[in-house]
Image 1 (cartoon, helix red, strand yellow):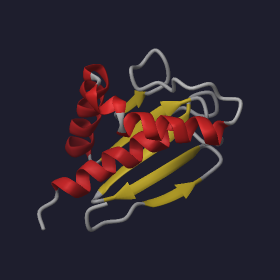
Image 2 (cartoon, helix red, strand yellow):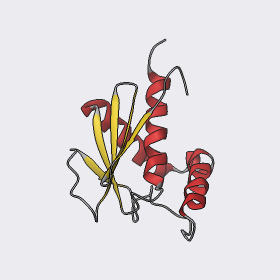
Image 3 (cartoon, rainbow, N blue to C red):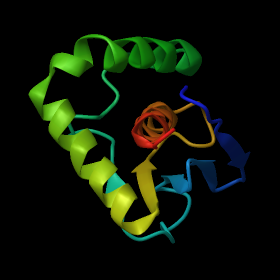
Length: 125
């Protein structure tokens, strides 16, 4: 990452990623109502939805991480959704990502890390 780090706080209902002056909260839509606005659902049918089988969630998240940072970079639908999320994050300083995995390992955490990484790269200096 470019001159920054991400702090991650985990609770029973959410995981919070903070860095570069932004906060992204990952919620499980089945456990709690998202209390951060705006919030965006990133499970299927979203283009950002997890696309790997999940018998082993850690392995599925690792495959998703590799995919979104590799082939996903060339996918127009993925880039459009990431741009919407990034613009909302810049405008509101705080957004929520909603999925069904948390507290288990979740691809939404990978999306949060990627968005914050973009924010670090965009910062001057």
